[in-house]
Structure formats: structure tokens, C-alpha cells
Length: 380
Image (cartoon, rainbow, N blue to C red; front, side, top):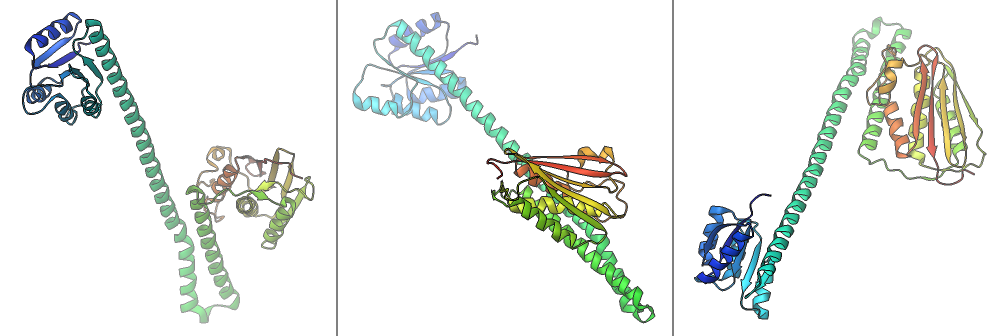
């Protein structure tokens, strides 16, 4: 056990010597015996005691209570008061300095020992508690700093990717515009239309990129709130399929559902639109040879299952683990345009529903995404 150092502040020399003798027999180390407030403050600065025994009535300009208050301003050292006076006013002043004990003279040795042990134990507990609070605060502070740094890094990545992904369609627009401006008279109508289509496609790709980044930023910043409400899921899904089908002639979207026609689970309509739009759009995009794409709904009283399946280019196995991270694209996509954000957005939408999304895919054979969303009430 480490030595405990005690400063005795007592203006009666006989009492002070007796007190020092008793404390030494108990195993304490006496740093100094002083008789005034000024001397006590100077001794604290010199020796840094673990505890101060402070007589309230002292020689000099300041008494023990005022001395204790001054010491507390420079060092967190527990004080135990010694006094022959126990009037209400003195007790009130003493309590204002938050002492760790109060001994009335004359006191027995056992009283002294118990008071000191309690004071030291309480002080140690307070020190440990303060350290725990500081560690917790530091941990939270570091976590906030790391979270902020991660946010800055993520936004920096978004900006750099935006810059990179915008450069290609902008170059296409610029080149096509220059050709139309300077060589229009030499171009056939068919070639002019080809240039116009390349501009339209580039603008469409840039618009999609901006939409994807905005949706991703909303989910990252938690500004896209989870607001579930009863939704006619079958009708909603059929409308999404019809809307997306109207935008493509090369694929046939097939919608099937085993849910009751009046199924109205509690889901977030906006999040579900992002989810279905991204999964179906990806299925079309990565099925360049055309073919069927299936959207299938099923479920029970506890969960809804949504499946989107295609017979497109598939996803190489080595890319499955990073599939839902922003800006991740497999190396078999070739020149198929894309941002690498669609599946990251889909994952965020599923996470906000506290659901799960899984993928089954084989390169060259197609892909199937399965989304499972829990529902708090029966679907019908």
C-alpha cells in the first residue's frame, strides 16, 4: 500500500505534536505541521499531501475554512476539519467548502482513524469516477472526430468520383457540339441525329449521376427519414414496373405476386421507390442483349420478400463482398454507363427498414437480388 501523506494545520503546538504522533503510529507520513493558513498553502505547494487536517481557528489573517477554500482553488486535496466549535454559522461556512470530514475536539483515536479512512476512500472513489468520466468523454470525443473525418473522407470521395464520372459525358457533349457547330454542312442527317442522340445520352447519364449522389447523400446524412405508412404494395409495385417498362423496348418486365391484392403493409413509399427503381434499372442496364426481368412479391404476416431477377451479364464472385459499397463496379461492365451508387442506395433503403438484401449471381448467367423487409402488422 503506498504511503499516505498528511499535512497538519493546527495552531496549538501540544495538540499538533500529539496528533502527529498518533498519525505516525497509524502508518501515515506527516509532510509538515503548520500553524497558519498562509503556511498551509505554501506547504501544499511544496509537498502535495494526500490529505489535510485543518483546524478552523488558526493564527494569522485567514482561518482554516478560508484557507481550505484557497487550497481547493489550486489543488484537489481532501480536507478534514478539526475544531472545538460546533456552532451553526461555523458549520454552514465549513460545509460550503465541501470537506471530507469534521472532527470535534477532543476526539478519540478510533474516531480519528475512521474519519481519515472514510475521507481517503471517498476521495479515491471521486478521483476514479472523474477519470472514468474523462475517459468516457475522450472516447466519445474521439468517436465524433473519427465520424467527422469519415464523413469528410466520404464527401471528398463523392466529389472526386463526381469529377471523374462527369468528365466522360461532358467530353462527349463537347465533342458532339463542336462537330455539329463546325462540320454540320458536311454531315448527313443520320450522322447529325447520331450526334444529337449522343448528347441526349450523356445528359441523361449526368442526370442519373446527380440523382444517385443526391439519394446517397440523403441516406448517409440521415436526412432521408424512415416514415412507414400503410401501402398498397401490389398496386405500387405494378405502377413502378409499368413506368420503367415504358422507358425500354429491349427488355420485358414480368411482375408476379403471391400477396393478397389488398395487402397493405407498413413500409416507406419513398424508400421503396428508390429500392425498386435501382434494382430494376440495374437489371435492364446489365442485360444489354435484352430478355426478361422478373419482379416477384411474396410474404407472410411477419415479412415481405421482394425479388428482382435477370439473365444479364452477372457479377463476378470476387465483387460480391463489396457490392453494396459506393462507387463499386465489377470489371465485366465494359462500357455500360453507371455510377456504382445504385446498389449502395438500395442497401441504405433496406437498412432503414431494418431488413436484409442478398445477391445470387454468376458471371454470364444473370443475377437475383432478394430483399426481406420486416413488417410490424399483418399484411392484409
